Image (tube, rainbow, N blue to C red; front, side, top):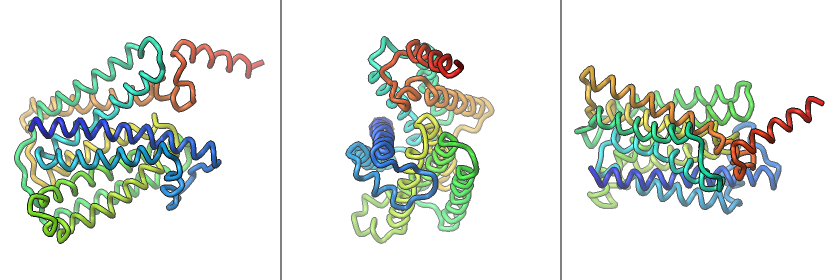
Length: 314
């Protein structure tokens, strides 16, 4: 169990690096080539692949995938995926170091601590255990169709009105839900690894993982290119573990704490986690990095904003 936690933390560090680098690559593509994402672009990944930062992000995502596969071999889905929400802490830490200021505001550090508390509270109360290694085909079909409907709905809403932040937010939700399903397929596949390559490549999960993983990667690319990281990151960070926990229970029969006290603590933990994610995603660190002002202190950024408002009102 301890090994699963360590591997999950390594995976979250890699996915955080991936989010940052892919967003940097998307912004450079927009600035250098004038390419803005307004709808579905099946060639977007190939355009982004010309950006070195995006390629570093892609390599980090693959490393995170490898750590995630390993973690799921040693721990239940309901344990591994919530820990991956720690990725936002790594994003926050990177941006805090990049500002070279005296430090983040107390509100943001409180949100970072709240995330850790929320994850710890949920995992301690849920105490995920048990579960089967393989699920019946009918359960997988039902789960897949439900996930497909949710992802399609989020993509549809992203295309209806709104600006870049609106599109990025709903594409982030679609991506998070898709990654949660990918994690469930990885869990199925990881149980075959010990039986050798023949068992892996003769099982349906290897090929579903290739298709769904590629689709999730394309969704993630659209999400980070559509708008600010502050808009897409909550969907990545919350949608993935929540979807994976539900699939762990429904598909694999993993058991969570169900006493009234445990359920109350689980809900409270998720609420605290979500509040921390939303606060950090909208912090001045994240927004400043998006606007190219990440080296400014919050006071300086506020002064500049007031000066600009005064200038425009003249």
